[in-house]
Amino acid sequence: MSKEFHVFTNAIELMEGMWPTPLLKLSIGKNVWAKLEFYNPLSHSIKDRTALFLFKEALKRKTEHLVEATSGNTGIALSALSAVYNVKFTVFVPSTAPSVFPVMMKLLGSEVVSAGSSTNDLLPLVKRLSGFGGYTHLDQFNNEINVMAHYETTAKEIDTQCRNSGINLKRIIATAGTAGHLVGIAKYFKEKYTDIEIIGVHPAEGERIPGIKRVTPDNNFFKMAKVDSLIDVSLKEAVEGVKEVARKNGILIGLSSGATVAAFKKLGLIDDPEATVLIFPDDAFKYVNELSQYT
Image (tube, rainbow, N blue to C red):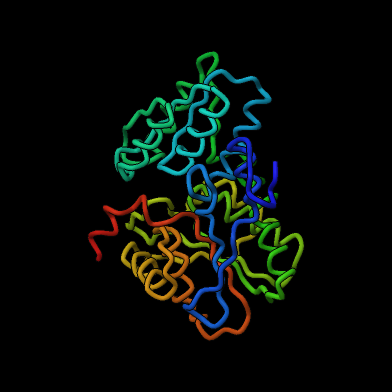
């Protein structure tokens, strides 16, 4: 209805009508900005974008029953869209995922299967189920639509926001989970500019940070665009990033967001006059149990 006055008739209008998500200047460096992706309304995360693009593609195939493996936010977003479009959704969630995720998916009406210690453990089960008639595996880890969702939306928003606000963008720092938003942003900016650096962030060897994964050589998305470097971050460092933004800016960010702050600090960019944009995929509220151990 009226995007200007934030009046919408359904959840899809609401999601797309609230784009672009805010770009906020932070008090943790001279010229550092945060893309606040928890303003997306369904999962309160950047995964709303991925889910919408994957879901729309599946609807073209007249699917009867969606199936996916996810550790969290994608599952909530897909569950919400399944409710909106009245499509069945079975989601496989690792038993190690924060307990809030399966609860939210069940509230939205999805069938939740909890098993394994990671999404890698669950993918064979998902593929086996999707072999039966009527099931469609969205395959967020290999489906290039995941990358293109962020090429078409997240990256373009950052570019437009910076250019129209006089922000001299030098680099973007983003985490790797599926690597969809990291590679989608890299693909867009590497095609359009020659002097903007894209930095990826992933858990250090042996570390587990909810919402992100260590990049492995078999990640197909990394073949689509150049990421200039990958920074290792520990869970403790990610938590320190969450604390710093909370105590200097009053914003409660999630652990993957905190990991981008940790990477920014490791790179020694606090006094850099050229602008850095950090992608904050979600907020802190899903990770209270994890964060409570460090407060």
